[in-house]
Amino acid sequence: MKKLVLGISLLSLSLTACSDYFDIDSTYYVPAENNHLKTATDTLYSVIGILNKVQAIGDRTVLLGEMRGDLTRVTSATSADLRNVAMFNIDDDNKYNQPRDYYAIINNCNYFIAHADTAMKNNRNEVVFMREYAAVKAIRAWTYLQLVTTYGKVPFVLDPIMNDAEAQKDYPMYDIDQVCDYFTTQDGLQDLAYKGNLDYGDIRGLSSRLFFFPINIVLGDLYLWHGKYWEAAKCYHDYIVNRNGINTAYPIGTYSIFWGNDDYNPDVDLSYTAYLSRTFYTESYSTTGELITLIPGDSLKSEANYSELRNIFYSRTENNFEVSALPSQALIDLSASQDYWDYNGLTQTFSKVPKNIGDYADGDLRLCRTCVILDNATFNGNRIDNAAYNYKYTTRNIHIYRRAQVYLRLAEAINRAGYPYYAMRILKTGVDGNVLQNEICPLYPQDSVKLMTEMNFPADKYGVFDPFATDVNRLNTVGVHFRGCGYSMADTLYVMHDGTLEQQIEEVEDRIVNEMALELAFEGTRFYDLMRIALHRNDPAYLDQKVKSRDGAANPGSGITADLTDKKNWFLHWKGQIGY
Image (cartoon, one colour):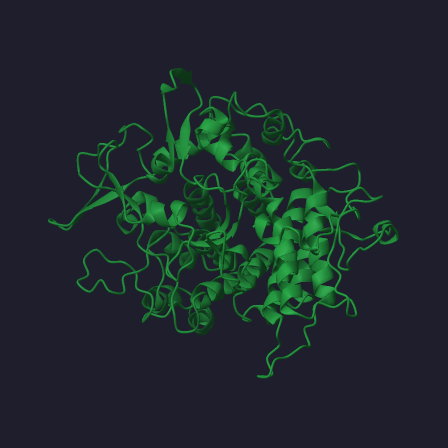
């Protein structure tokens, strides 16, 4: 991506200056005519310049979210800075504590929003630059959400800062609720959600449609953090049903990791139905693609925005085959504790697969196929202790949003909105119009019209998978749990129990948190997911207990000395200027 814009004067204000997080020392794009972005060239180069700035925060978006959670552990190869991230000992000099990079994106976006000529129309009376305007608004909102959930309280700036005097001004400090409230009530994002996808064609072998942040997903995240659960669920649902256009579908699919034979030999019998390739390998854009948004990384280590994630998670020559992050004992234990249900097509019967298989193949199969740990590994004649192939990190690019993640956040939101049975079905079997009308709505009769109208997956486009069905053309929907635990619809223990609504919501939420771990491990969302759930419950101890259990029951506390029952310790701080 950098090669595309070399030699071009771009909108690229890297903010730091007298306030330290504002810097007015790099070039920026200012069109000659009235300081407005009036041509396709102006907007193209400005948007690409913004995306170039987004590259700078890609690695830390993943690492601050993953290394502080409960699903990874450090190794002897882990750098001091990354180890300090994992142990909640992050000082001002830590390489992952650089707020100026977020403000570089924000200031670029502020400049574009202030100067793009959104009144210009073509000969068909269509606003010319509205898609660019919508894309930049989404990038700014997404960046602010990353910033404020990382630092807790941040200077909130909406006007472009062009000189030292503007950098010296006192800006209001906004917390998570204030940031989310602004972007969901005052920024006008809702009106831009259906302006169409921005597409500049292929850039360095990637579809540029993958570079942008869908507004309905960003809005869903903002509403979810803000505790507006129905609004969040509606945004995620609307993204799914409209992702490929009106009257189309974007089902979860029937992709899974499964046992190919009934002798359960993990060396030869594990298979998958396009799951790994679609989730971890393929970075093409398609109507059935798992990947939604990525941050492209530079191809050479000498380039400014080269991602180190492959070297942290995947054994390769660049890291001497030693990774810096491995699955935690908590993740291994959680995966092994799941029940895998097999199906025999000849007898049309289900059975639970036995445990103690080994090679991390007990229970859920996603871990053993996602991260292959190489015990007693030898490379180039040398014994390597920390060797692993983590197949979520085989390319130079950083994946931000994908389909299963959106379905899980829909489940989180609709559960907290008061519909735990709906959320449970997303996990266990999937939801289509027939399931909604015949099984979910009768449980919530007072809200059945609202559910059918605003939260429906039309039965002519979505069909819940049934192994006994003869018509398989529309059987395109499964529960997310199916992706690693087999025929979860047959699991008699994977159910929601009777109780008060609040008890049911919390029980289903516990299952959602586990499913997020099993499905999204290593992808950078874990700490923020735990933080959000702790806020839902108004229970800081929830996060403290989860994070400090990462090394398993034999090592309570996991060596972390920070008091994570104090919310101030959830956030980074920087030079007394930014932080909770």
